[in-house]
Amino acid sequence: MLISNYVLQLANGLPQEICEELISSYDEEKAFKYDTTFQQTYIDVDLRERLGKYISANIGDYLGAVPKYVHPYIPASSEVEHIVIKKLPKGKEQKVFFDNYGTPKRRLQIQYFLNNIEEGGAIHYELAGLRCLPKQGEVVLSPYSWQYASSISEPSEDLFIMETYMRIKDEN
Image (tube, rainbow, N blue to C red; front, side, top):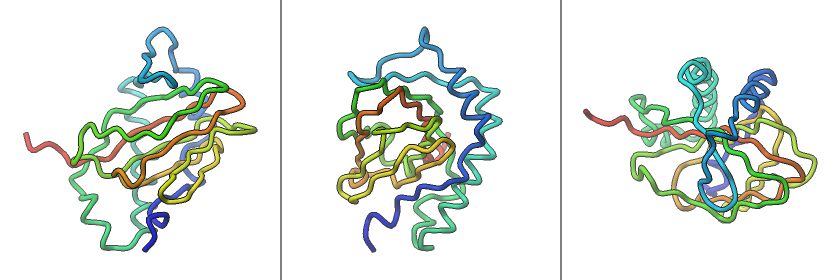
């Protein structure tokens, strides 16, 4: 199978009102620069609990769409990592990026577009030859490995993405 078959963009990610709430909860004062292009902030515990049903449903959709031999790679004992809201400012691009923190425990990257962008702002998976256009509420799910390193093209306005990962639960 082609590696592009394991990247899915689904329309049923988050409702519009949740996307707008997440954008309004983004706090410039608490945001920190992750690198030279985007800033991010963590969401609060109450909001995280409310998002759980959407994240779980989208993971279920992903597992229903990929071949069954992928399922053991994302075991039922997996857990959602921290959830961040990323802001990529208008006119900036995110270069090809792969954060190997948590490897090999991270198994699935989950990115939700929180706003529509007229031009730019697409997530590019170079090795898979895919481009995922930013549409509010849509979610992009991909395996977490170097083959799925991605970049984001310059958005025509500020781009907001909620991001998290599924990882194998610690055995503590």
